[in-house]
Length: 399
Image (cartoon, rainbow, N blue to C red; front, side, top):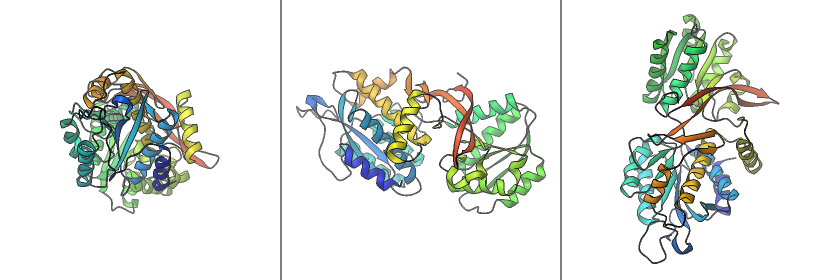
């Protein structure tokens, strides 16, 4: 399903104020208390999602998950009616900044969720914190008292795969390859440092031109000539689809194990097909997690949209869980951004489809990381859980 269908479905079933609509959910006595929901008025929650550009498909995943949660809870969070103010995050920080100001100044929302682009997130973080409006998002904003991360962090992802290789495959010879941009360098350099500290041999390291590499054969030849027994690759999106496909076409998958973080296969398995078979990735989520909560989520998602939920879908569903718990903790008191933020700080264990987790001191999850293997069943590729790598804090420490 494309994002347009998801957006139409949401608009048809939820109370949504789109960008350009007026109205407010301030307290009934006109005291300007942002999104208070007093006197029975709905609590206004901002929902910033990309509707165009490179992250539009992720925006669709977020909308679908939010729709399911609100449908399951009769359009309520914490027992209060919700008015979801959905606005386009856009594809640039400039557009996102305009959207954020609208949510704060015109819509006067009590909290915000969504936001995919990390550059946009950094640009809007102070807009929300200055207005004392908490944000629940996967975006990697740190050191902001009103920003709560519900996804994953680079330290927990990098450390968990390094620990696995050092503990379980210390005799491997690992070749490192990734896209030549800041995120690619940060992740590859972190993994290299961890492997070297753990005594694992590094067979080589290469960075490929970001966004423009179509033919990986010269780099795959370097990997073969290096004698590496394993490869750790950091690619996402179309680059991940091309790299994994060409890795198999080159025959390296026959005797070299390919590792990566979740971006290597997440959202790409359909395009990669059988070429992805056996690829190992670490992640916070897969639809194959064996739990009643996850099974119910997957059944609802597949039944509504005929698609498997992604890690982004789960993260948005978890965001709704967190908001639900925070609003319930406020009870009959006025709902303000400050009240929600205080309630978020007091939450204990959180149960979502990924499992049980909690916010740590960095306002990000301490949670289980899973090792997944790409597998084919009945003509469909999926990531199955083969082992739990352990519980990691957002700073990459074993809990």
